[in-house]
Image (cartoon, rainbow, N blue to C red; front, side, top):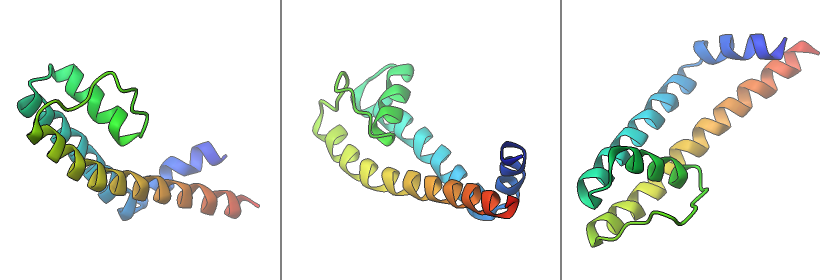
Length: 102
């Protein structure tokens, strides 16, 4: 039942929506900025954005320009904060839903 109730609770949570929209905005922003500053292809920019925000960081792509490096510093700090908050809200919804089922 948890898998059925979780999406319903997530849809009703304003915190979830705010953070999900912020996460989408930060991914879009990172993709556009890295494409423009670093000259990466769109797919490479999206890939770099996602591996950065998920802290995977394979190391196969990294900023090469000073502008890209400065943006990456800001982007990592802000982006990880947003992603961590989103994970926290999702975890809270899951825990609350699981407790209600007992």
